[in-house]
Length: 116
Image 1 (spheres, rainbow, N blue to C red):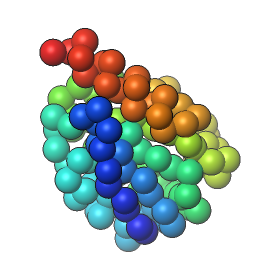
Image 2: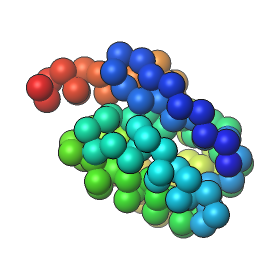
Image 3: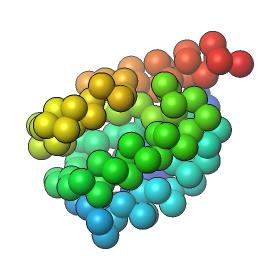
Image 4: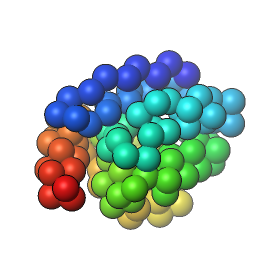
């Protein structure tokens, strides 16, 4: 799993590439923007090749640890493989999901402003 961390408008952007599974889930959870409860994060899932229940659990668990669970983690660029995992488990109802990262960042930034 390759994790690329950037930021825009005070929002952490974490792009994932490769498999999000039991081996890589701890690496995602340890990513500084994901681990910081006060940082809103956009997870770019476009290049995730495979995600198992451990990967899904890492995303859901990280969202629950955020101070603002409604906007703590926003998902973007979900490919069909990842989308099926979220839909099969009904986990998509827990997140705001966008087709592009810029829209997800704008949404998260607006929510951050409204929260303060």
